[in-house]
Image 1: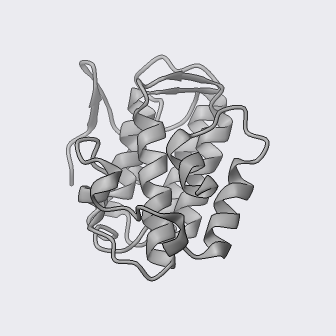
Image 2: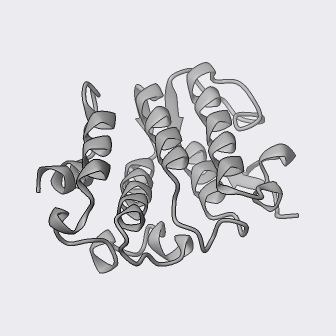
Image 3: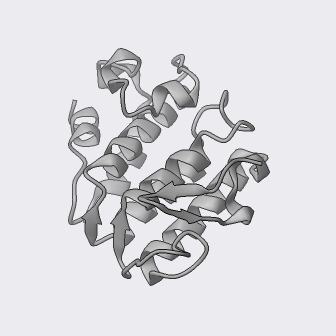
Length: 175
């Protein structure tokens, strides 16, 4: 079992969301829904042991998402549409941000990972693709022409009407 999530000096333990217990991409999408619920209500297993306001996304929420998306059972599988949708739902639910842009980076990389894979393009392992240290340009498609039009339309539909826009995804869809 992996160590409890630590943010600042306060451990948060949510065994039902431990990456070792995630066995599929569907399980990862379900775990991301739990994070979304915590963002919406400010309560739940991902907020235990810390102050969390409703509709707020903080660094710990971004860490939860990254841990879920890089669980060993899904590490070498492309990000699924359900996982990407769950991330868009988290993005939409969070009206306040205090994560220094980490979630926006993760969202863009996960969605591009899904889009590239769904378009038949090769993608690296999730720990590489979703790493905050590795630029998306080092592995992602450089032109939208190589990405399936249906996938681009889906991304655009997810972004329509959102008060926040992700610049990386906007560039991909606009190209």
